[in-house]
Length: 236
Image 1 (cartoon, rainbow, N blue to C red):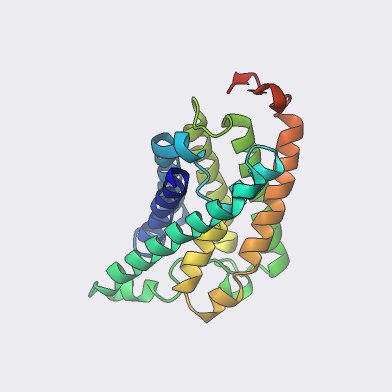
Image 2: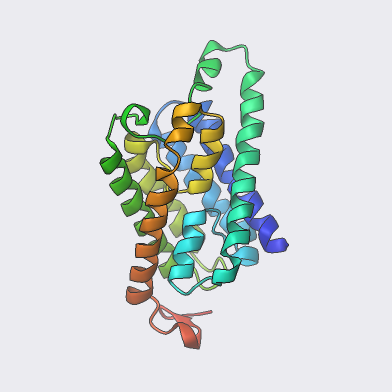
């Protein structure tokens, strides 16, 4: 239950940054990327030692593929992550409704949802968005496998993950509005309109494919001896 709660609150924090900054805050990719990166680092430091600090279904799937997370626990982690994400989006949506600023009301049109074609900020097609999301998620999982010892936020791992997410969001926000996280995509799609909901499948499929590939690659290149408890020279 503590792991469930840690994943829920961590994902809640991250999606709060997406909605609070992305939909209601300053315009542009940089503020969102910085806010999400800082939130990730903070929550990994706070509760990463409880659950491992995934806060993202794709990370959970990628770590399972890398042999770093029990396959039997993936569903419970994903449920917690989606629950935290939806709760955050709901609360920030309610806050947005209380504003008399026309700009805030306009932000409710898609509520920082992800999309392709007309749903993409740069009008990238489905193939381009899918490739970008899969590649970025694969890279994110490789960073996680290489920096985070099993079931713990260790050393500089929160900083590394925060930097990686911020950098990858700077690249993907103009393409897909920056997902890399199916829980985040689900939460904003539920409040972002019919188009976002109809395109949501891609933001589960592409990150999951990328996560599995990143998990296998990370296991091969980084996790030299999982059985002995030594990963990339770091004693777990």
